[in-house]
Image (cartoon, rainbow, N blue to C red; front, side, top):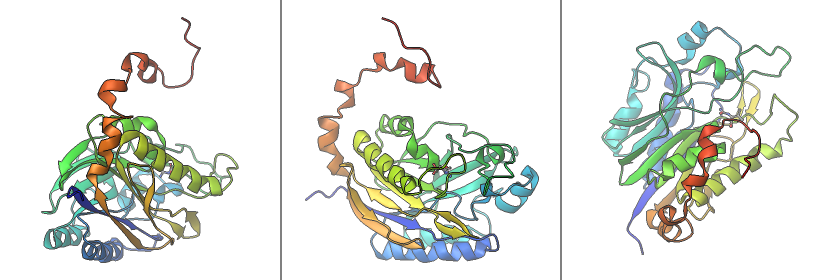
Length: 311
Ligand code: CDV
């Protein structure tokens, strides 16, 4: 039996309404952190934009958004109890929030915090979905492209908590490049949070496909990149706007090891065996032996589809 294990917890959140205070939200996170620790977790993964409602659904000025929903410091007085409890319990965490930098740049950000409550890693979302303009006829907005700048760095991998851990955020999970950039840095675990509305405002997408695509991207990406994937939803009806649940921990086999069954605050845990990926890394996905980057140039040269290559 392998000893190379890490206790992984995903703390899914039910809705956070506009009227909910940061203090009330942090109390919910604290409760789930304690439950994760009681279930032998070393790391607990919280959602994207965990401290507030999913505010990009509302049209407002940048100034109003920054005043109401962004954090100019991390930790700050509202979030400090989470850092204090992590240090006391000896548990690491991933947390998504809206970051306003000292230079005034707005990002959709996630941090990785170790068991001594030090911020060891920061990631700023690269694949921002949605639009910048007001769509008065849409049932709600998706204004990530308006409120956030594109992240200033690629996905990183941090050696902490006994594992090599990479971070992503929500829409990033749908893009194979996200995962490959981290697996080429020897990531063993990829953690991410998400807010996925069940309704697509851009086209009449059948609702069931939202969950289907969420799960197939996580399962295929975990397998193809030989990583554990841990994904935390914020879900349910936030002031009437529904978002999917389905928080999962997926193993490097591509199989779901644990999945949330509610649309409320819920903790799922797995003792993740990091050695499970070895067989895949040494065989079908031995990148050093089998990858052919000389044929992948188009992936970085082209953003969108173009003419076929002629030989
Ligand atoms: N917050 C997100 O990035 N949400 C997107 C939606 C818009 C599709 C997602 O990929 O889940």
